[in-house]
Amino acid sequence: MKILVTGGAGFIGSHLCDHLIRDGHSLAVVDDLSLGLRGNIAHLLDRPDFAFHELSVLEPEFDSLVAAENFDCVFHMAANSDIQAGSRDRRVDLEKTFMTTWTVLESMARHGVSRFVFASTSAIYGDVAEPTSENFGPLIPVSFYGAAKLAGEAYASTYAHRHDIASWVFRFPNVVGARSTHGVILDFVRRLIADPSVLRVLGDGTQEKPYLYVHDLIEAMLLAWKSAKPAPYEVFNIGPDSATLVKTIAEYVVDEMGLAGRTRIEYGSEPVGWPGDVPRFAYDVRKISALGWSPSGTSDDAVRRAVHDIVAEQTAA
Amino acid sequence: MKILVTGGAGFIGSHLCDHLIRDGHSLAVVDDLSLGLRGNIAHLLDRPDFAFHELSVLEPEFDSLVAAENFDCVFHMAANSDIQAGSRDRRVDLEKTFMTTWTVLESMARHGVSRFVFASTSAIYGDVAEPTSENFGPLIPVSFYGAAKLAGEAYASTYAHRHDIASWVFRFPNVVGARSTHGVILDFVRRLIADPSVLRVLGDGTQEKPYLYVHDLIEAMLLAWKSAKPAPYEVFNIGPDSATLVKTIAEYVVDEMGLAGRTRIEYGSEPVGWPGDVPRFAYDVRKISALGWSPSGTSDDAVRRAVHDIVAEQTAA
Image (cartoon, rainbow over all chains, first blue to last red; front, side, top):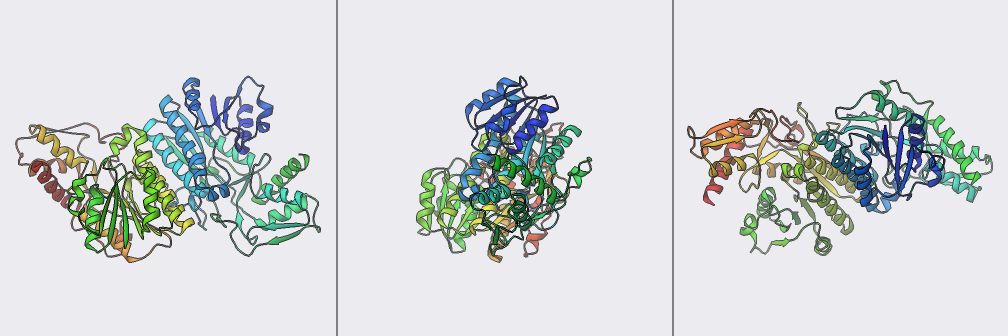
């Protein structure tokens, strides 16, 4: 297939490109490199089946590209992926997370692209404690990132139904691995490089969330995408059925960097890391599991592998 | 209280103003008169406790007004209320329904307004047959109006949680009564004034929806609004537990206009009236009923009263 990947130079987007190229698809990547990195796709740039457009989805040239290229499918991965940044500046997620989604869908409808894959998030559920299925309601996001993704889902549903766009919506957990551009692991590693004597942790360390290794996420997406064409709209939770404490992440990072016994880990007093943080979240992933998917390990395993990848990247740099 | 009503010159907004003035509140109305009518609030314009601003929420003067006036509460009724228009031009609901909501919330957060009442819609549920509670999920709208309102709810939830804005979200049914600016009753009446010999109905007449008389709607909203302050976010379905066939509406209108036996009613062959129409919808209204609310009559009664009001208005004009 001829596939457009928005945000294809980003963390998850670039891993997705690797998988799609391996499967024999022909790719165009649109990325404005505001969060993505050319280095993430450098190894693909010379291939005849890969084209890179340094471009924002919000620029008019994006619509011209969709008009000209006759894509079979769009994987829409472009977004502000930094939830904390969206809480500091409320326009960031409105523009980079919601308006990018609206613009992609509008161009697809205008030019007859018939398949849409959307990177949504567990943040649309808000602060709920019980294991949450795709049918859970009401949807009460507490972060501007979650609001923008739910707004994107609302429009994806309507474009799917009104314009016959087969649409796969995947609600992502915390995804970790090489090429991360933000997140708790990268943050800890960078701070320990700067000062190995102390690691100050936001919150009291008891926040517990499901982490998934990036390759497991992409295998889940591609499995659902290949299994059956939605008629026209399907939502899938993707996540492990386990979770990892912030405290465990801190200890893994200190350990991987060979700082055990040398770094003092200091915790805050609040059970929440930042405003809009959801301290505890558990997925019901029976729907994606029924297709035969399971993660390659627990949430702790995913964190351990990602800590290894990220420490290697950051200390090589 | 000092209350801002956006869309206060519109159909539901102007009735809301009448109720709030009667209850002793001081009102400012913002309406750009793109759908609202000065005539709907003409009887309030000279009051000292009523101020009218002919202004779009999307103009910069709106934020200045919120900054200057120290409102206790905003009732956000401004929206594109014509679902069919939103399906012809996909930007209409993005701007008039979603971006107005985002802009109102953003101004409230910036200037510390602490209460928000939002006119949402059953259209956020999409095409579901069973009685639908506020906890129903997934939310799969099939109209651009429904998408824009769900996007608005997503942001209302986040602003409520992040900026301590107590928020009441009301999911409206089809609301009918005097001052309607669109809808099936007004459409039938106007077409019969133009040509009393025949009434052509979109769809086969079997579409069945819950209709609520506008005063019943406003009583439900104000009852919930006075009962308890959300901490910080509450969603309420408002609707009758009965429904009315399109066929019944056609017959009531013909009857009220004295055309029984003279007008030929012609039906289409499809069970759906237009793209994005949800042919059958039933509400679970146990939550608002538990507060002591019930409609003054059935859905058929509401339609009968509204047909009477609208025929009187249109034949007087």
